[in-house]
Amino acid sequence: MSVRKTLAVVLGSGLLLGAAHVSATPPTASMLADTCAGCHGPDGSSVGPAIPSIAGMSAEYFKTTMAGYKTGERYSTIMTRIAKGYTDEEIAQLADFFAGKDFVRFAQDVDATKVKAGEKLYGKSCEKCHEDNGASPGDDAGILAGQWLPYLNYTMADFTSDRRDMPKKMKKKVEKLSADDIEALMHFFASQQ
Image (cartoon, rainbow, N blue to C red; front, side, top):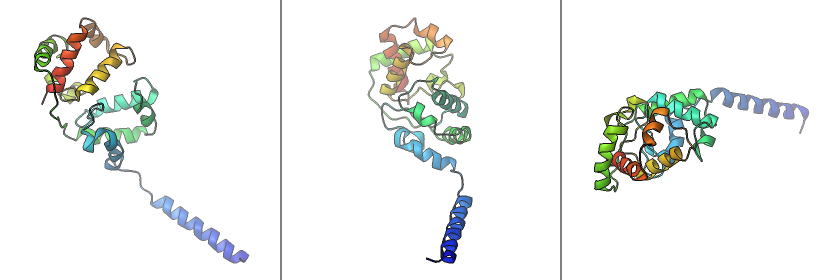
């Protein structure tokens, strides 16, 4: 090939690559959220019992949670790696996106006796921080009402085994509870529709 043709191919390729680079747009919140759907379900409503629903979560709680995963301060076998792949701006986009979605609660098998016992314990131990039976996103303590029972159990195991830091107020309350009490509370939160 002649020098002139080679130069034309190189320059043309450079222009095409440059044009492709210029026309690339940053991902939208919806596009970013699609990457979460594989685990957390469409629009953040999980159908997998070990994975929480993130729809309806307050934007502030979402950002704080992701920041904890990103720095490794919050324990997770998977999310600590995933969170590192997002910029703070992308996390803010995701936070607003999921905060605008409705939390979908799925019926699940719970023990009615444990639910009743858990309801009493909730009033004594949890109500001040986890408002509205754990359904309020505004308390910035995460939505517990209607989360999958296995997820609730795994999360509480992380707290009680010190893999995850427990807020001081929560720790004082949890230390007074037996294993049966904790199980009853998890059944109560899971039962909420």
